Image 1 (tube, helix red, strand yellow):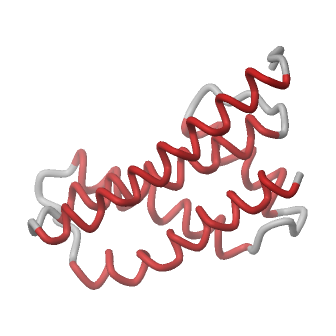
Image 2 (cartoon, helix red, strand yellow; image 1 turned 90 degrees about the vertical axis):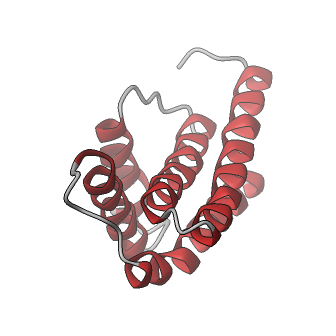
Image 3 (cartoon, helix red, strand yellow; image 1 turned 135 degrees about the vertical axis):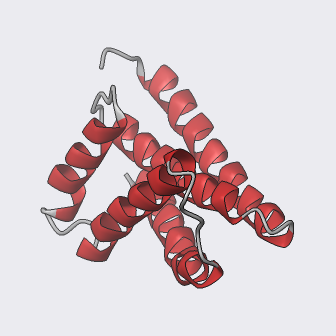
Length: 133
């Protein structure tokens, strides 16, 4: 990625802002009993945080699949972030895809609830990594 440090910092800040704002939308959607929408927002909150981390480290991402592969390769397999985060990211993508594209599937409240706190933690840990490097 051929960005200046200033451009990279701006993009990282925008991605992290988007991750936090997207995470905040989850509570609104759960309160309105829009669980499929909340699942979508949960995935995208993590996606934007992961993109921020990859951009911060100068790694170009062009696809969702690429973000998963690079995240796993660069941060999970190296032990920088716990394996559970790689598993969570995959679970969130599956949940989002099912809820977005399968009209016979609806996210269960318990399924969503058990991933809410880990989603918040992954975003916060990524923010710490970015700020400390």
